[in-house]
Length: 490
Ligand SMILES: *[C@@H]1O[C@H](CO)[C@@H](O)[C@H](O)[C@H]1NC(C)=O
Ligand SMILES: *[C@@H]1O[C@H](CO)[C@@H](O)[C@H](O)[C@H]1NC(C)=O
Image 1 (tube, helix red, strand yellow):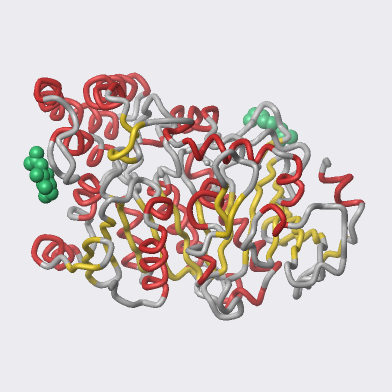
Image 2 (cartoon, protein in one colour; image 1 turned 90 degrees about the horizontal axis):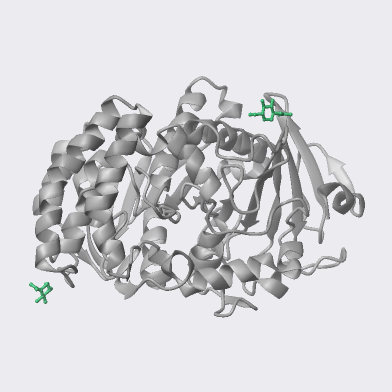
């Protein structure tokens, strides 16, 4: 997304050496026992620069004790799993994995990514769909009965470097360099190492889910996996089955001016949100904003793109920001970090030593931040926001990979009006029928409306903001499980 003056959420957020030395270290492949805590270091011959350092946590058998606080102490509802780092030269990528509450040996494997760019997937874990949700005040967390781990094995990855608990030990390259395409290489390497570490998970269908700037990440990452699969031996292929993208940003050119529709029409059912005279001025700016953004898209010169971004921000975004409303949920005021008081609580929670210890966070990792502006700036430098990811989504569909797009209708920043423009114009071979369904055959479910054609499903969640599982936890879990089960919505 062309840069706004605010970070976009999931846009959609011991030195290891001394820690490791206290624990038995084994290496190689094969089953990783859930014997309390154990650390393993794994490498992969195709990715010689990368290694994976994994710590197991077993919530049922804490027989092997170390001096770390247990994961269930800080995160009630946590299941057995792993936390750890993928290391590549100076880069250290943090992840946390929780096995399914139903049947870990056959339930799907899902990678969750928040957006930003620069926002930590710990926001997804502790605010949206993880096993626990941080309580107000940030001193503790409570079980999340609607966690997506109810039906899937889920891992949360902090990427790119410089985000959340991921960090670089090279101070000249602190993170985010190279934008989405550079990040896709690391995520691919991560997955290859993952399957080497956990070969048993190869039999599980794999999906990538996320929100917000995930509309950039996920199509590009998934397409990279798909392209690599096509030139890999069966053994090395990643069993990618689907992608799920909530309130995503796919095409700034197509989506940006939809902030006008949300602000100045009754699209949300609670609008218009701004005064008539303000909206009159905004209406006049829509065409020029779109025109400047397409100039930036066609000629991604920083001068052109900066001018486009400044104009659109000033004319279309600023009036909404001045209203004091939450830009992720038009029904609420903007209060607290990133407009949510809970974000302040999450920051406090994830900065405590006890929580960092239980999550296996390296001592070197900086204090937790929901979103890193530095990383966001790196994406601006390479004009990452202007990348149109629609062709990547189309390419996935043509390769037989399913895609679900779900959008909370109260979001302002990556709203449903813009998403519906994107998917009503997606160039893929199912487009005529998909468009017919969108225009003539919307179906009703308990959370709103949905339609689909072939491998593409689109879901509206009425009254949910940008972070759908936060606002509508039961509906979010339903749409997630129905999708994984290949069933319609009820
Ligand atoms: C550190 O980052 C700089 C800037 O990108 C790069 O030139 C250098 O090679 C990096 N050093 C290492 C050890 O990776
Ligand atoms: C906006 O839409 C809602 C729901 O359809 C309706 O109840 C409300 O009266 C509308 N508001 C305006 C100003 O038209």
